[in-house]
Image (cartoon, rainbow, N blue to C red; front, side, top):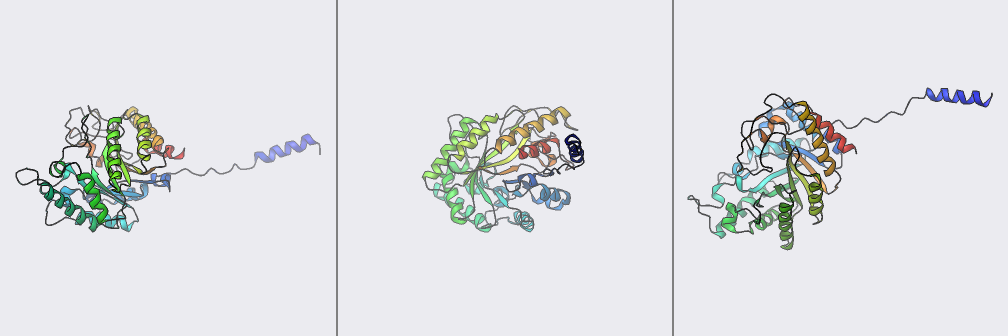
Amino acid sequence: MPIRAFSSLLILAAAHIAPAPVAPGPETLRQAANDKLLIGCPVGGIDLSNTLLLDLVLREFNTITIETELMPFKLGADEDDYAFENADRVLEWADAHDLPVYGHMLLWDYRTPQWMFTDPNGTPLPREQGIANLKTYIQKVATHYRGRLAGWNVVNEAISDTPGEYLRETSAYRSIGPDYVQLAFQFAQEADPNVPLYYNDYNLVVPEKREKALRLIRELQAADIRLDAIGMQGHWLLGFPEIQWIHDSINAFAGEGIDIYITELDVDVLPRTVAGANMATVDEGPNPYPDALPEPVQRELAQIYHEFFAAILEHPEVKMITFWGSHDGRSWLNDFPVTGRTNYPLLFDRNLQKKPAHQSVLKAFSK
């Protein structure tokens, strides 16, 4: 057979060879995260009767945070009778489905019962009494959940937003003094020596607040107080923060030898005058999208989520990412910083359907 004819036969044969199958990409966040990191959302007692929502959680996420049931104002409102039941129910559901659970939180001034640090007249308790109450509360709670949690948010939002001021003047600060943060971590470590302990705060990407957080980390380490991770709350906006700020903060905190958690992640699409999550903030603004999010804003949300995740995933020190809400209808941003608005900050809509931002996050994982 002439060489030219033989070559033509090879070409024809090659044309009939089926192309190699392309492996399908991940369809869920859980599949995308795989063994790279934990990715989760909050689950509260109110969610346990919603089968469709729980199915979404199990399909999309590989960890949960107990939403509000472990906050001191719910758990320890009665000094003599701690209300463990609702948190226990969420934890039992998660255990039944092999989901690691994060505890949120042991101490947060905005949600601290009055009895812990002030007398009935609002006067700060003497230091010794404040320390005793803090120790009793943390040890009772942490002992109750010993060995059952993937991590404890020990102190939430203690750092001040005020320029030049280090720590907020909280009720614990006024009673005990600035070392209350160290004492909280010490008591948590004593109660549950093996659970990872972390500090959690918003706007830690902002350079000045980042420096205050680094100071706190170094003070804890210098006092030989165990700190395993820092929770960088991702209460972010369209256009905030700068991507480089995310890189800079992760690098700075990782340089202190601790893990990074991206906690409480959402992206506010509504107009507001301030960033962050200071619960004392009361803002004013319109409710521009009461019925649906316009497609241009939907695309902008998808793009910014892709940029945020692309930045975060460059850093193996990030061990966990948790959204602050399972879907738009369960977001706190419907009532913060302006009450009664309709917000769209998450990856699933109010009908539990994937939004374009979901696909953009999957693409960030695939790179």
